[in-house]
Image (cartoon, rainbow, N blue to C red):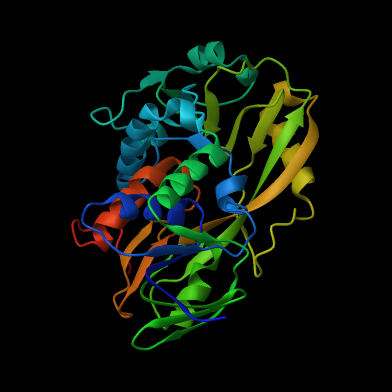
Length: 355
């Protein structure tokens, strides 16, 4: 098979790679060929398709918070196409935790007492927390619909997507020569958007920039939990590290666990269900009849400072990073892609540059 050459080659078709391709291909400043290679048969098979689909804007990092708010503005215009449901969020925690994520000049929200929060979500009866922050503009998005939007729009503008195409090695020189299970690709500009695999790709490219670590998180769908309507805000307890929302007649629940992994397998860890039962028993009396319908795991990839990495590698010419989105990939993807494209083209400096 002959070597295929592209002006830009993007590794990974999750939210990082798809949103970057979408914005780069629509920029009037860019002309050239773009190809996305994806190791799985279906885009979004890992973190992009396995997350809780929550659009949460009141996050701890002020820079990431701004990206989430800007992305939310774009999603409002795509409401029907991406299945956006503006149900709002209810963050629970201590006063200092809520103040740390609250930015009234950027995002409208309302501080509530525990009694007011229980009125909003009766399932919180008996759950201990000091206060709550209600953000009405938060919500839930259809992961697959949003990812498909980016990819379909990019492909309509000539971007190629090649799936079932695993990168097996990478050589650097005057160009990047990428060996895959479906032949050889060559490019002068390589976008590393490989999710949990970004450090491996960077190492092959000769980068010694900050390492990124994938961490495993478990999610559950529970039955037997009654009293939460589909249009109620999703709940996230910052202090006790748990979140839940309605899901297909049941309740989607996470313990916010982060388990270090040595391999890239998203198997369910031994003891995950027991840990869930213990957490529910200690913190949520209204969940006492809960039964596990389904459990799965996904890999959330973080840089050591838990900030995004968006920008040119300082040591490897032509290597561009869109990585370390750490659970914010879906919610921030619009602005991540826009910022990545602008930084790639030299039109904007990224505050999340490669360290």
